[in-house]
Amino acid sequence: MKIGILTHHYINNYGAFLQAWALCDAIQTMCPNDEVEIIDYVNLKHKVINTFGWFRFYKDRENLKCWREKIKLPKTFSRARQKEMKLSRRCHKVEQVNKLEYDVIIIGSDEVWNFKDSKAYDPIKFGIGLKCKKLIAYAPSVGQATFKEMPKCIEEGIKKFSAISARDDLSFELVEKVAGKSAIRVLDPTFLSKFPMKKIKVNKPYILFYYCDKLPKRIKEQILKYAKENQMAVYGAGECDKQYTNITVNLTPFEWVGMFRNARFVFTGTFHGTVFSILNKRQFKVYLTNESRIKKVGALLRELKIENRIMESEFKFDLQKMGNEINYEKVYNIIDKKKRESLQFLEDAIRR
Image (tube, rainbow, N blue to C red; front, side, top):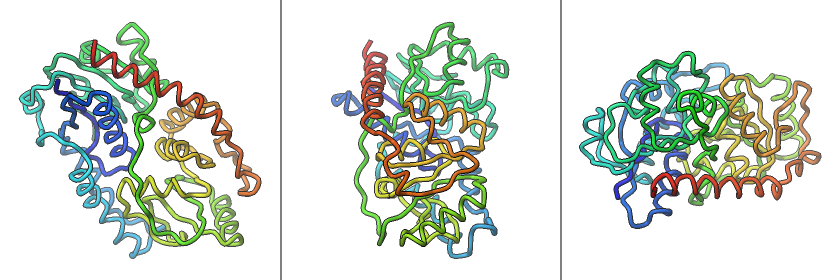
């Protein structure tokens, strides 16, 4: 059997890369005798806009040295895709994908169903025009899109899927309205696989940031002051800030995972920043301002019963007091059960 995964793997983003790699790895482990690969279908508009975004210079938080490292990231991601991913030949049209003759195509995860995102929207991600024996959706996210805004062609495309799962509330609700039945609730693919260990060069205990957009200046300054007073470093995982101890922006995806693995505490404002804090059993806090992230991260925290990870306006950092706030034994009891259910969904969807 030939199985293809269709997702946003071509985007220069750590979450996009790692969810694609993890889903491919999980399915190959489950189906060792089958051919499993990521379909190297590239939406050129989406890729170009994403790539050029890395060349912006943010004078309030970057200096020239940071920026020079940051603009190397698209090349770093390109090399990582070629080295670490099992890719099909490059495709730009649905007809080219059909010529690869897949028995099963799995679409997901990430925001592949966000039809409100004009730069990323692509009918093929809704199964439109695809020819295969089985079409499966694994944990696609719709972002902030709602059923009322959905074009008719997308509704018809979704109805072609033989099995659909979802990872967040809005996606779950949309599928229920379109298909007339509940989607299976599954974990993000990054929970399904183990990632390679990559060494990173850091000299002392550190606090890690990963895109805490609009974090109040007062809170960030207090965290930086605490780190200095307690002989700790402060790093950004694949992001720039001239206030950090050193530049750690140009990381490979697996080096990025390593930054979470070794952090004493993590501050993030993203879904995958939250996921990798949990995967590495780190103590962490989230600061959320983006409406889509509020919903996605909030749903995950509720599911794992750790809603208190959301940072309050009066937050004050103290690692000694916060060093053991999360009981990961309880969290992993939930994750392990949901992981079994997620893998079972995939196996049933592929085999039946």
